[in-house]
Amino acid sequence: MSELKFTLQDPNEKPAGPSGSGVERGTESEHNGADSQVATVVAESSQSAGSTPLVELRDLTLQFNGQTILDCINLKIPRGQTMVIIGESGCGKTMLLKTVVGLIKPTSGQVLYDGQDIHQLNDLEMTALRRKFGFVFQNAALFDSMTIGENVAFPLVQHNLAQGRQLRRTIVEALAEVGLPENVLGKRPAELSGGMRKRVGLARALVLDPELVLYDEPTTGLDPIMSDVINELMLKTSRRPGVTSLCITHDMKSAKKVADRVVMLYPYSRLPENESQILFDDFPSKLDQCPDKRVTQFVRGQAGERLMELRKTEVDAYQDTPDLSSKYAK
Amino acid sequence: MSSGSSIDNPIRGTGRRPNGSNIPEPLYRWFSDWGEMVVDAMVTVGDMAVFAGRMFLWLFSTWPRKGTLLPNFYHVGVLSLPVVALTGTFIGMVLANQSYTQFADIGLESRLGAVINMSLVRELGPVLAATMLAGRVGSAMAAVLGTMRVTEQIDALTSMGANPIHYLVVPRFLACILLIPALSIMADFMGIVGGYFYSVIMLGIDHYQYLNNSRQIVGGWDFFMGIFKSFFFGGIIAIVSCYRGFNCQAGAEGVGRAATASFVFSFVLILAVDLLLNILLDAVYVTLWPHATKQLL
Image (cartoon, rainbow over all chains, first blue to last red; front, side, top):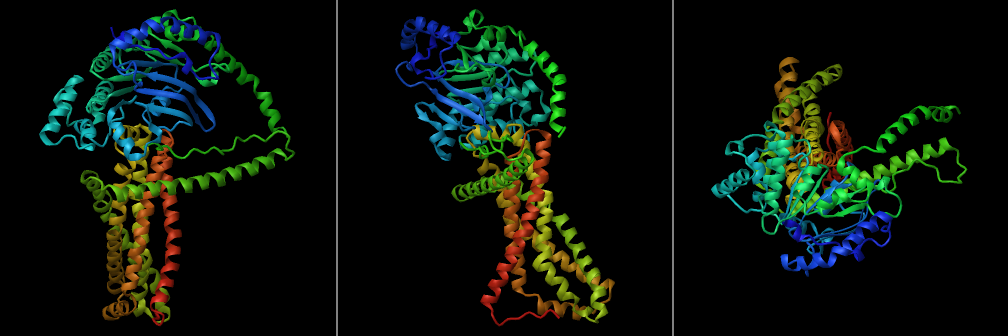
């Protein structure tokens, strides 16, 4: 089982300041208990035990227009692991993913790839490093000025890796890998269905044999069957030797199916002070037993007290009028 | 690349008055709005300069692929040619039509050729070609790049190891800057033809007088001046439009705004730069040929 590859975060590496609410400590002590046992497993299961993790986030903070999105995130993703980040919309999942590949510069903190701070690299070094990444975008982000074939060929052509007949063969293979026939090659992205587009996006991300595959909500907006197809494709990809995956989703079925490890992020704006944004960081099987109500609520998909919030804003909306009028009375 | 998003603006006003200040609220807000506008404008100018600088770095370090260049050349050059030729013809005829009555009143209609062709070659040809290009190509570029930004295609490009500035902006810049002189020459030529047609054939000005006057007055320098300026216009169109597209706000409205703003901003900039270049080039002319004088009439 792939869970064997799972390594745990060293609790000492947690952010110094904002860790320490009751819930947070609860999951951490669980970690400590399992730590020695897992560590030995890891030592024999992968070479990464002693070496650096593939991706490491250190005190990652991200602010936009003075609004904090991510606050002091510390995460380590060892080689070969499939990590799934869950969390509600707007909690900064996509931002986190884009920071990892260097599309967004963090306000402070570091993103280490193989021990190297990627935001210190210049444009050319960054371009070279990006050959090792495969990014599957939420809406596939296919270039709509190109055909499907050109889209999948793009990374290969960009890095001068294949030409002519060999290029075509590679593309056809990459498309076959995600279950698409050869006749889609000449079509435009607009002619394909959402599921097909997503698979083309996956094929394009995998065509360079990346070390790190990042998925941005891969199953969102797809029917249940196509979601499962995508899940299977993700599993298939993660079984490739040397592939590390980082997936963000709010599809719990998908998370439980593909993950070696699940991390739950909580929106900074609703987080009590001095608490880590990472509410949960453990095996997917432990999701249901998590003592934190916010985690179980998310996993089960219950609105809970958020319904009260709705009602509150309604009341606010009506009671706000006198305040407004007093503002303009002058 | 690491700094793909625009420079963040940490100073953006919060709209709140600091506690304890005794400035009245409306006055405070008035000042803070103006301040915010000024800061925003400065940030935009600086951001655009950085953008242009990075574009030039890429331009001189790696030549873009032929596959990315040719479609852009086709769009900017070939597809713009008919509309530029058409507007050029009409502006030549309009010039003849407008100036004829004035000149005929003082019996100088035979000098019309010099006036029409001079203003065409020096000013109207290049500026008109640039305007058409800004409207036809510039706003399209902003819209295309804006859509690519909004639908994460630019992020996709970046994540696959292609630099979006190198891949998207440099070919567009080269297409604009290399083909706008050709379009200006086309506008000049068609304007001259249109002006000649209207003056000589419609208004009956003497053929020899018209051409001879033009030949005496309009010289190589005037032609050079127009073409020289057009390089700057092309550069402005490409940089402004691509910048606007790259910094597009989300949604259909953002794309629309980027397209409009790119045209308005590049047109204003074209006219301002036109004036500055005229002053500069006239000074250069006087320095190079101090004794040459131009007599229009």
